[in-house]
Image (cartoon, rainbow, N blue to C red):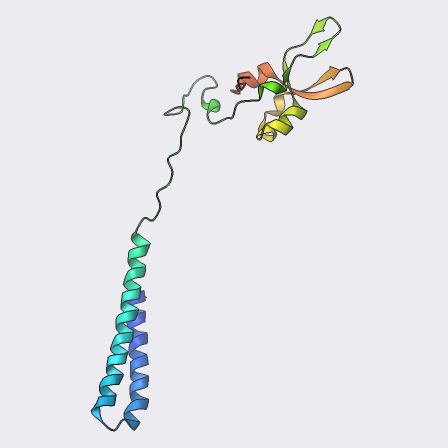
Length: 156
């Protein structure tokens, strides 16, 4: 049922129950007029509140912020669709491990990324590797692997 109908039925029922009790003891017409005026006032207030609620439901109160994207539309093609909305990797986490005279590819330290990169838990598992250091083995992410998957490095 509609709210307006329920409000009208309730206000009418309230007026009739008050009318029945008051009319038995009401000696003159002035009391009866006051009673009917009170019932009409209650009905008008209930109806105005209902209309205000209906107007509020239909009205837009806040506008949503416009989202800012790197590109105007998704770029389908080689890895372009995956490049959107990724924060750049911190440059201070990039290092080149050296084992003797042999050089390895550049890697991002997993420990450094966990500290300085908020989205480190969403980095691809395929790029995670172990690199031998002077103190043993350390977890790292291959820079070339991350670059192929759309990650970029922040400028120093």
